[in-house]
Image (cartoon, rainbow, N blue to C red):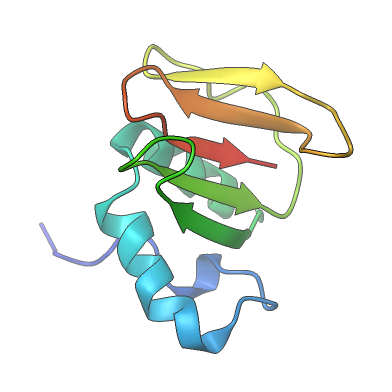
Length: 107
């Protein structure tokens, strides 16, 4: 087994600032909940890209990741719940973890 990171620069949208790429990839590879890492990997494999990553929202210790393209509920599982928001002021949909702190994948 290799210690290669799951996420590399290829997963980041071209608009992502170069200065923050290393820190962003570290957050995705080490701090994002494993259930959402699996969903994110599947979305990236299908051509989606990360456009934003943040920490400590919605909870202290959480990670939120925004993807460029919309996704659907096909990745729902016991640890990640799909929610359709479809509000142009917020986002289209998200996956959130069922455990605290709540991690989010947003599109």
